[in-house]
Image (cartoon, rainbow, N blue to C red; front, side):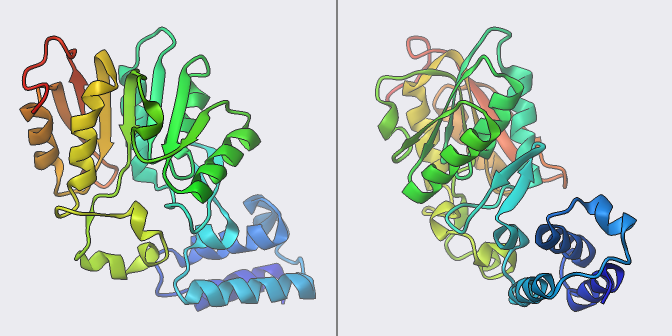
Length: 285
């Protein structure tokens, strides 16, 4: 078959999925190691037998539901090509809202930032790409994911420091101008865990106790000891959790509390400013 025929056949085989045309092109570009423009410019190209075999194998895996990002080992985030693996969540476009919010609130001077539960390093690397003079740390509990985040930084030439550990454990005594996190926030009983790409993603990066609020609450409480006066905490959360996160911030004396919506119009990012440990009320609640 020619490339044009392969393209059409793949779309037909992937029909019923969320994005058969996009998935077909991504798989073709991956196997051929060519940009998408090649698919349009050379429709008469005939893939080699080896390329056809690889395409068929990837198609079978995709038809079983495996995410395209895991098939190709790569996903773009904030225009950065990130390596991904089944040890990490797949970066999603809606998380770019947290980058936009951070850039709007960081000081003009060089700042100190930390991304907790960094996974692929997406948030930390995106911010480092925009603010090269900032000191950017990232923390990841899973050793395999931490190693992947380091590789992404090295491959992209973005100097972030990745520390392996649980939340604030590797950050003893450190304070930051901004703390960011996309923590686990899905309830263990949520039926969406049995559908789509999340079936293949690590449960430890998705699920939290207390109806999905346990890690969010932990970060709100503990961040007070790691934020400079006037520092910001930005959290991604589920579309129905905005009010609970806002209440958590307010109860502990945070100020400038605001929830932002994702590109689909759902509440997705809640942020707040810490006024300072000496001035805030309820410091040790």
